Length: 172
Image 1 (tube, rainbow, N blue to C red):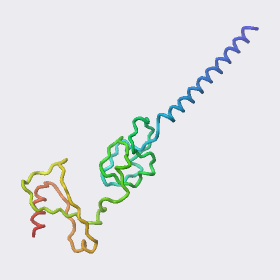
Image 2 (cartoon, rainbow, N blue to C red; image 1 turned 120 degrees about the vertical axis):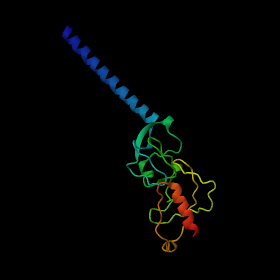
Image 3 (tube, helix red, strand yellow; image 1 turned 45 degrees about the horizontal axis):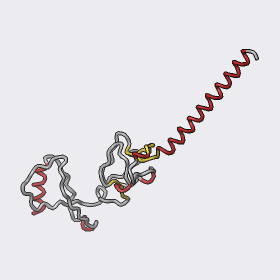
Image 4 (cartoon, rainbow, N blue to C red; image 1 turned 90 degrees about the vertical axis):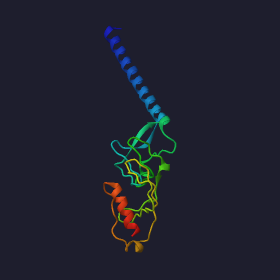
């Protein structure tokens, strides 16, 4: 055989071997990705889902996560979480757990109900700061009962003056 023929045969053999190796590695990577990764719903970058706020499509993304990193009870489909409400604040990059979501409306929408804060005794009177935990009891009233009430008050800074004012006005 001539050297040229031998060189062509070697080149074709090398190209066939290289393409077979490439196809085999792509197949193995696809199989590994299928077994090692699964879709999970997370909060989108730059977003935060506040408690009791409805979840929109802009708030969440579907990402491929390592199977070992997926928490038990995580949502796996976007449609299962859209429109639901979170029972607590969920931050950027956090997986959405099904037990933290609810279909029922926990609090009435703005303008649908009135919030009453009974202020019976405040001893000692301390300043409320951001991050303080305050217990609030919500008492629902029917729409016919709400029609006799004046417009709701909204808190403004400084908070202590508002609390004292509300205490006086509620006792009167």
